[in-house]
Image 1 (cartoon, rainbow, N blue to C red):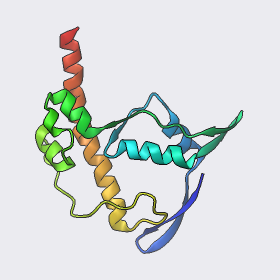
Image 2: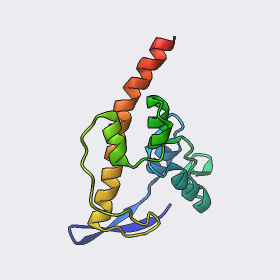
Image 3: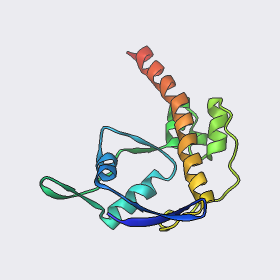
Length: 146
């Protein structure tokens, strides 16, 4: 899979993408929600990551992801918000998540700074908060329609 080094509190820590992570990413029963999902899938596809199974090497095949803006636009029926940033989307769904003052890291980097790690965690958490607000709305809409 790959070995990486990250810095945590100034110390370099070696990290490996293990088989369980690859299996998790390939699980089609999980739908990943966030920003840049198509780019993430393309990156996984182009680098041909594999994991070992009982039958040999199996490619990491992450296909079940949805852009957070797309989901918000569909659920809230507001096409104009599909390309909005996370802060705007949190306002649309009525949550109060503060904007992180940082810039998007190069996701292909092998080593990430503390600020880049914070950015990734912020992005994932904010996407979760938005999705958590939207999905109950989506479930209510489905129940009403049926």
